[in-house]
Amino acid sequence: MRAAAATGLVACRVVLAAGVLVLTGCGSSAKTIPAKKLSQLVLQRTDLPRGFTAFYLGPQLSGDQTGARGDPRRFRRTGGWIGRYHRGGSPKTKGPLVVASRVDLFKNAGGAKRDFQLYPQQLEQAGAKQIDVGKLGDQAVGVLVVGTGAVTVRNYAIAWRERNATAELELNGFKLTLQEALALARKQAARLRDAAA
Image (cartoon, rainbow, N blue to C red; front, side, top):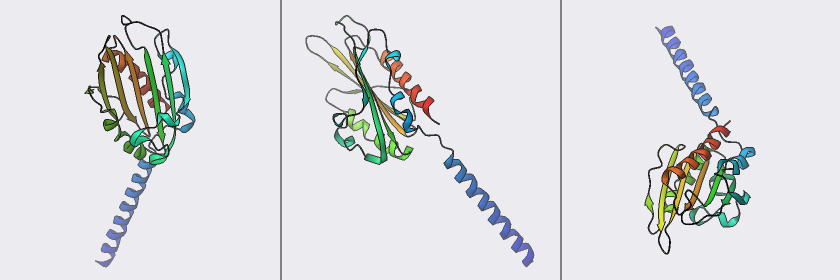
């Protein structure tokens, strides 16, 4: 009887040890986006319609970190990149005229989750209307602000999280649709997804 009990106890320990090994293995195989790919995680000139030129493409500057997300070391952040583009146009021009594509990279997905939680409040402003951005990354949120005056300007801001990164795309134009904004967001989201290793 004692031998059977001892054998059962040993079997339980083996099963528990195997379970711990399996859980440990799952955690270590989670893909992350490496810091060496940071500059490739924002929209590039080739991702945009014809006529766009970059007026800044490089590391985020202190002015790019604002509000609750102002600390460049928040949540074990490892770096950030931004691409700002524009093209000429008039109130009759279809599509975006100004595009800002940014990404923040974190040591792990936990830091990115905490960073993303700050986005809804950051995007909320007078006149902002929440929009349905569909499936974009692991989490996503977006708003539309329509500026009225002599001409109407449509401003979209879409933010999402992909693994250990958060990304944001800001676009504006006179005749800019949600579908056009989402098409560009999906292009950037693909860059993040493809960079995971």
